Image (cartoon, rainbow, N blue to C red; front, top):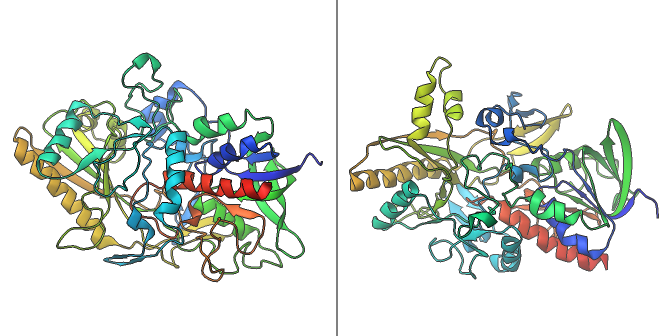
Length: 510
């Protein structure tokens, strides 16, 4: 067989691509995995806040907003994709998330598949990514078997907040985290509970990310080839346009063509859509797999906000990202619309504080704020909108986006601050002030929705197995397929879906 011909080509090594490669590796089929980046350098600077926060590892090209202004996105091209930098919070979507849900600003559509269809793959993904957690505390969580590993405990300062919320009849819970932490035997633990986890690469390889848990095990199989620094630039199709016949790749400045029986895109919701649009041809004049006109449309990336609780009490917590809160996820009595989720963030270092204040601010002020605050990440669902889209203009990636669901988002911020204030007065030993900041369009870590799946080729890009309606051997296994964004982290659903699609592909490959 031609050395450039494979049974499967997978483009991308993030949560979707690496998980799929892991799933297919034991099949013995000839698999090529293409990654435009390289392995992330393993160096002490991985833990240097100034090095990381100044964007030393950001290697994506500039993207642009609808005004044509450059966006410095938080995208990383490495083996493992953005999971190299994630905080490891791996949630199952709630059962109602798969149904049609009315929001204060619109409707979140029904999924063609339901929670029960994803449940067995969620279980597999939680084991594969070593998720720590505890069932029965989060009132919105589906009832399932125990997590593979026990919950990561709170340090005293976070524990006090946890207990204070419980005393106020709220329902805080332990975040489900994919961290390689052994809490009973430190000698057997890869994780050391450092303060540079969330948003940082791990020098110890102690995150259960797509690189460490899936890609590296996959390439130990002789039938799996990983090619790094290989940027896919175009997909070529047959004369009929019904199948991909060539994957054009730029390697060391040279264009090469690789062929496969099955081609799978896992480049992230933005880049997968962009590649399809770039692959327009006579048979596909509006972009490959785009007879519906929906490729790149319905772009979603969550509505993010950060509430910074600055207290007179020092916060000595080292590993801070351990607590979640979903009491307002589906709304409340006088606001019967979903608001979203809350989770503690990793430590806010003085470098991040100083980067957002006037340049003449003394360093001690940044250090004082960093040592006396607890940051919280708030997520409200970003609703699908045809006019929120990814497009290619003069070979540049554009995000044409208008915010939505603002009323629910603002209410979530207000209600969470009120909940924290109720603890302040309850404990009476501290005085806190709260600063809320909405994050901008550059925060694309939770991007999704640009190639949604469904049964009707006129209203969806992919079918139930995430195969393109228009192209028989083309699949997409990143978050492009999401019909809605929900209000929790998408990684586990991407991983579970990759396992589901992988099961389908194993049957097809036979």
